[in-house]
Each structure stands twice: as structure tokens, then as C-alpha cells.
Image (cartoon, one colour):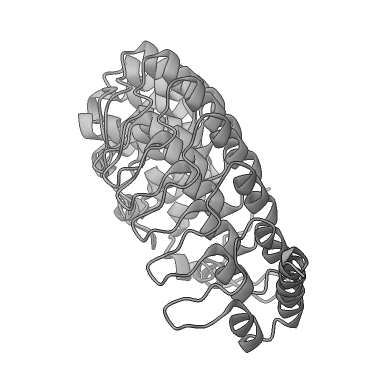
Length: 399
């Protein structure tokens, strides 16, 4: 029995025709061929091309993807093979979309090993060196070891770089892909390579807190004290981002505990700013200078007091931090704590302070700072401390 002829004006249960259904995707500028390719409907792709849709083979949706890119990105091996074998002259395997991605690089990023192998081994002559390099970058960043290995076996260079001059090793280290890092090192990737900001793979791994990758790079002779264009070392990054395990590992491998960046910030200053007690403790145990100021003469204690981090303030004071250090405006940690209403920090600082009325260049006192901002509880603490100091002084005077 013959099937009834196709009627393009036939409506579904919601009153939509085939044309109106296709129009639903107009916001993405996807043709029926694109939709079929991205969904992996190889039979539909063939049917559309056989019925005159060949002009849309190199058409692009809103992000610049072609039907071939959409099929490769989704891992549809059969569609990719058909497009390249039957109508390859109209499909560009080296074409780039709006993100600079190719069919091969999309397959590599998504980890579609079968599609990558198809493009490299069956249609390898069509994929130029730039295409392979872009794809290696994508695979390393995404952590697909099998794809990285396949690309390297098919002439992709381990020394390739992205637009920021980052190598596959730096990108894998940044993302914490230990297996890919190990593979790249085995393929002679250099741990000393720097990107345009002078960051090494170790800098990226430390910044992101990937302990296993940091260890692997150090075992392969990474420079533990490399400084980037802002003077930040791997330890500076690990400290700033609160990665205690990485901080410990770097210190065990000779990291400079008092490294100063371009703003004269040390790792201890960063830890104090963040209020990270565990990292502060670790740095102090490894000989960090407790009073090292930054370029604005702010000390770790001043930062911790200003932010109200009592545990860090207590730790710094126990390690002989100078409670009377002043910034360029002659403000002390106690003045900042009082100004910001940190009552418990004020109490702690008063235990170590030699004076209560400690004014700044505006000849304001602690009490006036606290009172002007409505911190009555702080005013009470300071007043009580001052009265206590006066009573103690009176008791020592001769009768």
C-alpha cells in the first residue's frame, strides 16, 4: 500500500506546519540540515542533501557553526563521515566558527575520540597544522587524555600555544588534569615555558590549587620561585587563593616565604587580607616576617585588624607583630579596628597596646572614631580599658 504524499501544509495537534516548526529555530539561524546534523540523524541529512539542500552545507548558525561543526561537536561520527565522504568539497574541515573553533577542535574539546580519529586518520590530509594545534589546546584544557595522545601521534606539536601564549601543559595544569600533564611531560613538554604574562605551568597549577599537579611539576624540575609580570610567585598565588596544601608543598620545596610582588605584597600579607588563619600559621612557622609592609606601609596586622579577623590578629600578635605600626595616615591597627566596629579585635589589640589615646594626623582619638560611626560597644571597651589603665597608674603612685 502506497504512503500518502507528503503535505507540507499538514498541521500537527498544536496547529503547526513543517514550515512553522523550522521557523522556531530561526533565532539560532539553524537550517533543517543543521538541526539534523546536530541531532545525529544521518538518514535525514542524506535526504535533505539529495533533495537539493547542498547549498546549506557551508551555512552557519548564529555562533558561526556549520553542519559539519555541529555534527563533530555532538560526536556524530556517521554524519561527519557522510558529510566529508559524499559532499566533502562543500564542507571545510578547517573552517572556524565565531570562537575560532574547527570541527576537529570541537570534537577534541568534547572528548569525542572516535570523531577525532576519523578526522585525523581517514581525512587527515584535509586537516591543516593550525587545525591540529587548535584542537590540541582544546583537548588539553578539557582534560581528554586519549584525544591529546591521538593528536600528538598525528603531528600536533606539544609546543603549540594559544592566543595568550599558553602551552597545552599550562592549560592542563590550570585545569588540574593530572593524567594529561603527565602525558605531556612524557612527550617533552617544557615546565619552564612562560605565557605572555610570564606565568609557567606551576604558576597556573598553584593558582588553581591543584596539589597533585603541583607535585608532579616540581618532581619534573619546575622553578618554584618563578615570578610573573606582576612579581607574583606560585606561593603568592596559592596563598592569595587560600590553597593551604599547595602552600605547604611549595614551602617544602624551597619557595621564598617572603617573596614580594610588584606592590610589595608578601604571601603573609595576602593570607592576612583573606583572614586565612591556617595559611597564616603555616607561613609564620616557615619564617615569614610578621611585620613586612606593602608599598602603602600596611602590615599584615593592620589588614587583619581592619577586616575584623580576630583569630588572625591573635596569631600575629602572638608572633610579635608590632601593634603600634602606622600607615601613611598614621593610623594604627587599633584605630582601624575601632573605626570599623570590631569590638573583639579592639579588645585583643588593647591587651598589647601601650596607649589608648592613639591619634592620627587629624588628631582624632580612638573613641571619637568609634563614636562617630555609632560603635557604642567599642566605645565602652575603650573607655573601660582607659579607666583600668588610669586606676593601675594611680595604684602605683606614692601616697
